[in-house]
Each structure stands twice: as structure tokens, then as C-alpha cells.
Amino acid sequence: MSTAKKEYKRITVKTLVDMKANGEKISMLTAYDYTMAKIVDGAGIDVILVGDSASNVMAGHETTLPITLDQMIYHASSVVRAVNRSLVVVDLPFGSYQSDPKEALRSAIRIMKESGGHAVKLEGGKEIKDSIKRILNAGIPVMGHLGLTPQSIYKFGTYTVRAKEEAEAEKLIEDAKMLERIGCFGVVLEKIPSNLAKKVAESISIPVIGIGAGPDVDGQVLVLHDMIGMTHEFNPRFLRRYLNLFDDMTDAIAQYVDDVKTRDFPNDSEKY
Ligand code: KIV
Image 1 (cartoon, helix red, strand yellow):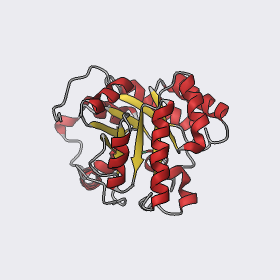
Image 2 (image 1 turned 30 degrees about the horizontal axis):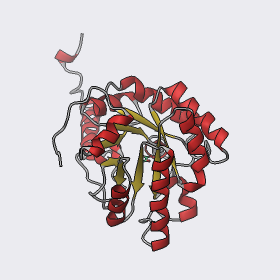
Image 3 (image 1 turned 180 degrees about the horizontal axis):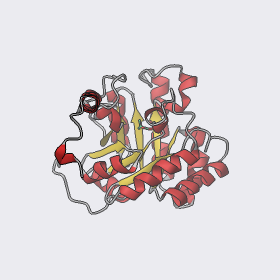
């Protein structure tokens, strides 16, 4: 199995499928704006997800449900303008694809046309199969999302680990196989037991990207603001923090306030 980081000029959905076939792990992070996306793309991430977690992270909502299609297009177009190499996947928000396949296609077309994103992601399995097929038939690449699907939070009632019971695990495997069969290029598995995630990754040939799904999948995704420690109240077991920007920024801003109050800033070399 290869652990080397291969050089790719531009990541496409085909690159991701090839990466899985070659045993190369796929890196994925969220971004919602130009400045962050520029850093993430420049650092060599394979896939940038313009997630509907923007509803929580950017807008301060408790769930992902309130974010609108127009707001997702705004975030996605900002990200696309920053990106040179990564594949940009955009979440279809709650309410933009659930009612019927025609509405799903209309929403996906708006995302592709108005944001310039490269692919869309939808939450759910066989319940939304016809919508996914309709989008795929229009030539739009689709990524699935199974396990914990935050747009259904009011149905689940909690954000705890999904598919621990046999029946739900069996359905998840069936849904993942269906997503592969109808032509999705990948699937996100969120917060499920790692042995189940491994089984799914071994039973389909499209990449399986995990978040809280253990190491035996084809790639990993995290919410950028969580992994760089800008958020600090969300502490699930699966989250590794690479920075503590909440504290670093708080200290820097407090220092600036102090410098202004004490007339230390600006000094002679900082004026015209
Ligand atoms: O919206 C999002 O950030 C996501 C990830 C958690 C996979 O869907």
C-alpha cells in the first residue's frame, strides 16, 4: 500500500477513484470562504467540501437545516474563486432536494452554474435514489452521505453514533452499494462503528470518506474550524485539533485592545 503523496495538477472525481484503487488515502476538509479556501487548497488538500455545516460554523445556527440554497451558492462561489487544485464538492442544503427529483436537479444545476463547484453531496440512501439518478443523468458528479446525516437530526433526536444495530448497519451497506451502482463517485460515512465503515469500504470500489468512522476507509474529512481549534465547544472523540486558534486569537485580540488603550499602537514606525 502506497503512503507517498503523489503530485496531481488538478483533482477530479476520476483522480479520487484512482486514488482508492492505488491505496492512496484521500484528504478532505471543509471551507466556506475565499481566504480559508486559498490556504486549504495551497496546503495540498484533495477535496474541499463546502458543507452545510456553514449553517453552524458561519451563521451560528444550532443545526444545518436553516441554510438556504442561495447561501450555499454564495459560500461555494467564494471557495471556487480561491481554488487551483482541489476538487470542490458542495452540499445540497436541507429542503432543496427532498421533495422530488426535478427539484433536486434544479438545485444541483443552480449550484454548478452559479458557484462553479465541481460536484454535489446529498444526505440519504434509497429514499433519494431517484433524485440522485436525475442529477447524475445531467452529468453532475454526486457524492453520497450515510450514517449520521445531520439534516435528519430531528428524526434521530441526537448526534450519537449511528448504525450500531444490525438492521441499520445492513441498510447502510445496501445504500452504499446502491450509491455505487447508480454512479456516485464517492460516499461520506459519518459517525458509525469503524468495523462497519471498514466493511463498506471493502465492499465498494468508489472512495469512502469517513468522519468519525475510523481508519479503515479511503479518506478522512473534518470541519476546518474544528481541526484548527477556532471552535472549542465541540469535542467529539473523532476530532483531532491541530491548532488552538480560539485561544491564540483571543490572546492576540486582547493584546491589540491593550496596545490601543495604552497608546502603544500605532508607534512611530507604524504611521505616515
Ligand atoms: O457539512 C459538513 O461539514 C459535512 C461533513 C461533516 C462531512 O457534511
